[in-house]
Amino acid sequence: MLYIHKSACFSAQQTYSETDLSVITESKDNRLKVKEPVYTDIPPGTLRRMGKAVRMSVGSALPLLKEFPQPDGIIIGTANGGMEDCIKFLNQIIEYREGLLTPGNFVQSTSNAPAAQIAMITKNKKYNNTHTHRGLAFENALLDAFMLLKENPDRTYLLGSVDEISDYNFNIDRLDGCFRDEIVSNKQLFDHPAAGTIAGEGSLMMIVSGQPSGAFAAVDALQTIHTTDERLVLKTLFEFLHKNGFPAVAPDLLITGENGDARLEKYYRNAESLVPRGTAIARFKHLSGEYSTASSFGFWLATEILRTGKIPEIVLKKSGKTDIRKILIYNNYRGLQHAFVLLSAR
Image (tube, rainbow, N blue to C red; front, top):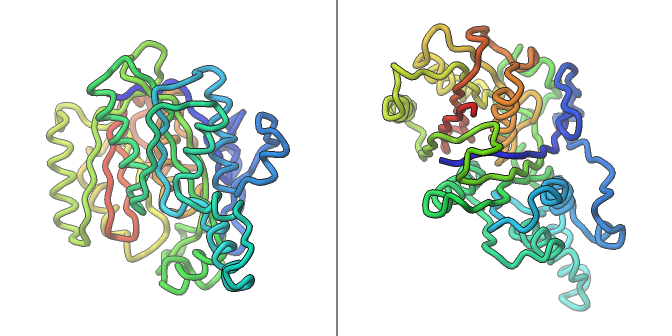
């Protein structure tokens, strides 16, 4: 079992330092950009050379590593890494005709740059791994930590995810139909379902271990599947729940990755039909926006609910149980990649 001891989340909402989800920050031009804090822990000279994805990762990780120095490994999930720096570097190749290129943009553009920068700043020479599996990048990082802790429960890892909004990716994904052409506020995202959604970005860092002492939440099980067949998704979720004690042990809360895209609603309706009537239902992508590792925001939300015992009104879709001890998360990325995670309070 994987236990969560500490977390830090950078998002478009007030989720860092003092969490406040009573007021929703509104999207602009169908994008929800991260509220970045003042990075007091990063030397100014180093900060100046950091791309946004690296900056967010390091900024959210360093405060945790003050309390838990030198973990046994750093594991991060990201789909695109520093995509903005990657595009800058590729443009330089054309502009300078493969001459004197700026190495900083290249260094910051690789997917493993966030994990590498954290390791270099903290002089951590232990296990270091980055998972780049599009919509399942975070879940694969989580699975990696889960397996490592099953072998060595006494170890501790820094586990996280990061993705940024890049103009290049946003425009390509919009043309592909992932994001809406018409401007829509995240406050009305679920009022008028249509093809596409809004873009987001964020970073989550956590300290996890195989020991329950001092933990506020635990991951009981997780499973992923690649398919567009809604019946197979429903069957897999049904088997996943039964393998983990259902119906005798049922989730008190279901958190879904519903994002206002009418094409994906059938998957979420099916998931909602499986849980008991008394199970509360929540959703989160009107707060985070859609991005490859947006499920990590839903994961952070679940751990916060387990830690505080309260469901923020702003995420609640259907009321139900108020004593939340077990949470099921179902996320769907573009109708192809599906992930189920069960968490419980400690």
